[in-house]
Length: 435
Ligand code: GAP
Image 1 (cartoon, rainbow, N blue to C red):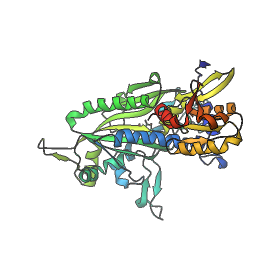
Image 2 (image 1 turned 60 degrees about the horizontal axis):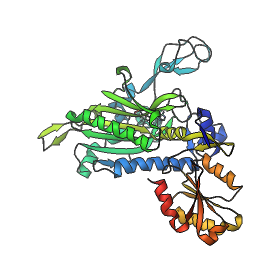
Image 3 (image 1 turned 180 degrees about the vertical axis):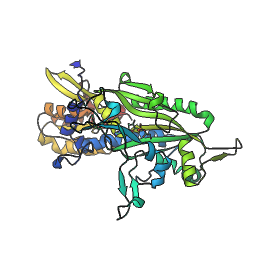
Image 4 (image 1 turned 45 degrees about the vertical axis):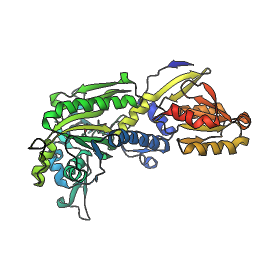
């Protein structure tokens, strides 16, 4: 077996993702809806695995973090207070000739990249999707689809703190959909109009901002490596003053080297007391905290870690994609970390005559692993199918298995095979798959 790490093309990845049921374009039979995506049977499992790992690690695994699931629709005043109505916009330019529109900060030259025409002056374009509550479409009933999950956390700060008897330093985490009317969505799911975020807002004393910022940046960077992502394709990049969001005093992105270049995977930001102060002022409900130990009243500072779930999935897929050679034939393989793989074990009967015991074995394994059964085509073809979707282990039940109560386990990455007793199989797989 020789390894040749290919230069991955994002379109090749998109086509694999579609062909194997990871990601489909939304409403495809109607020609598709721009930059919205549906997760197929394998994509939804991969997504669930990433989400659950994040939740287990950062919420259930900690004493200083609690979870939340707030509504997508929020009071319109939230977005005035948060600054999104006035500041959450991109500079938009239009070509005078072909009327195509572009984000000014994504343009390389001074002319239209599509036709070379002259460009109009830039104007600000707000990225929030507007909708109406109730049957009357009037200004008084306007509402927005949230462009970040964070605000649901800030407006529940007091509710959560009092009901859980927490005090700073502590955090609130949530996973949920966010919506942005992106001007130039592109690169498969990288910039979508509907996507999921995994956000944590960590409330601290103002004197402790920097130490918690450094702590969370390290923790979040390390988490990506724990997903099996090549650490050499991860880096940090601090925001320059002119690219900081309106709420942040400093921000560092964790970036990944995507097929189209280095780009943001997650932002870790010091939001200071901007959001709580704004909500205190706009709602008339003071968001300050009285700390009896310090005998001091203060508005906590917030260290935010904001990750994109869809972007993490794109990263996991791009990083896992590989082409090598097995037995003189080229094969495409997704080298997904075994604990993330949508299918962890595939069970094959060598012959359809062995269907019954092989199905029973699959059912036994299902309790503990994501297991599938496959009896169609040659064993070689079945291996290729599973390699392409990243299944780390294939188990073949052959005629000998009836006598020796053992099966052949084949490793996706090395393609090596081992004979394992049926009574040892679950423990063996559990040890290799890990968590
Ligand atoms: N609450 C802070 C916040 O939303 P952001 O940098 O705008 O900060 C955080 O977004 C993360 O959300 C990004 O790092 C990215 O992973 C994800 N994200 C943002 N916009 C996205 C989009 N249009 N499509 C997919 N993911 C997106």
